[in-house]
Length: 375
Image: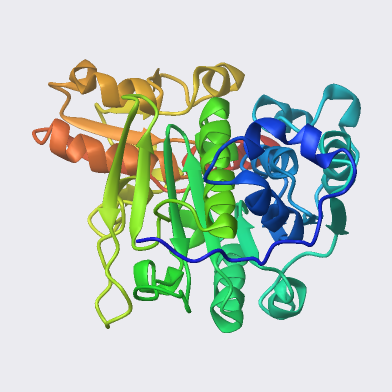
């Protein structure tokens, strides 16, 4: 499905831009006309983090004329593993400010708009109005749904990506495409899952290189839409598994009252069948295996006495290490990784009873500290 160009070309390119973008202009599908379209384009990028970093770098390199950066956060040391816009000297500085400096160094003719305001459902339409295209690299469901709802109302195409651990997804949502049927975020995911059921990057981790891979893909989709190239990813979800180096597609059913099944990597196992116990019930369980599925550095920093450390990724590779156990109490820091482990183990070792520790290690350690203080 090929779309017409999203943006009319600018009348001319600034001095020096033809030389800077020479290798891109040499592509016959883009040429001088396409480069002028890119310079006329106005793109808003939500988030300057793991996905926003490569997106912003490649949009600037492509010669986008106006880029808005929506991010109210500051650089943290833990960002440096995947947020390639930033360096050690940037820790503590506003992300949007540092990102703007990098964009100008790559594409001096690009107009950069910095929005330090936090995007919400109340201000999203106002903040996104006037842009030709939006790329969402945010990391909270509240922001994602606010962005998607605003883009639906404005009729603006939303290039959407999500990454966690070794899995990534990308698609295009558009309520008013020039060709084909509309597909909106709420057609695929009608509502956000409870926050406590979905692990964050801080809790579950993320492969930095995968952020770069997905961010580059999102930027390429933006270039395709602006210039009217190729086959946009409307109506299909790309799912990337970095561990197997495989990419597959999941067709997305248009807005006809029937929602498709979400990609497996984005589904959170249901917790309705999980047996849970409170930390103060551990002593009465008898002979059980305590299984800590956090990372090894978290385990070394503190765990429940007698617990076995098997990070979730290693457990998925070899569940046989707990085969033969009668009852296994699974825990992580607060719960999401343990629920994922429990769902996997119920299938991998069905003869073993799987129990979740309510509140995880954080709840257990809080109880232990309280007991020590009153002793």
